[in-house]
Image 1 (cartoon, rainbow, N blue to C red):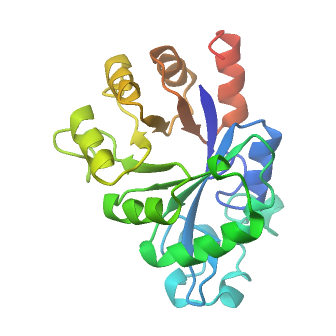
Image 2 (cartoon, one colour):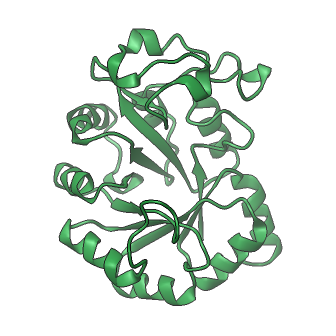
Length: 250
């Protein structure tokens, strides 16, 4: 099972920053997942929320601000004083950090308007297509992403069973249908007891990629590894890797 660092190694370092991504690579994560949005002047930046308040303590709507305003915000002190110099980075700077043989998963938190900016950033770096994947909750938007990046893996995000926005019914058949209709490559599913051996086997039988998010619990990770889950997102990549190895599951 591949270990994907959720927003970087975000239990220890501030999420979606150079610090958290660098730490994830140090901890030998197989991949890193980051969230992206676009500024008013067309720059792709790492940020989960539409507003900067939660991670910078300054309220700005990213879509309404220029990169020059966003880049000055302190995005690390909320986590720890030692990260006070961490800022909201550009995606292109994160892409420069991608080690050979690892993967970067880019979760799109806005609409298809970001696609041309993503194309510019990826054209600059010229990374192998399989090293950069895309995630998102909108099947329509992800279909447009797949058409723009046909050689890259593009997965549909699915909320965990019972959560607001989760498919009804929460079945492999419903999810496979959504993926097939939009010509996508796989699923990224919120974890619950419904992500079991039978569900995983069905998705893999369809020839689709699959990852689960998010668990920092070694017992959950061990169950999923033994059930055949190909990839797991976690905020604690080093810890989960260590514990799975201790159980002989990696």
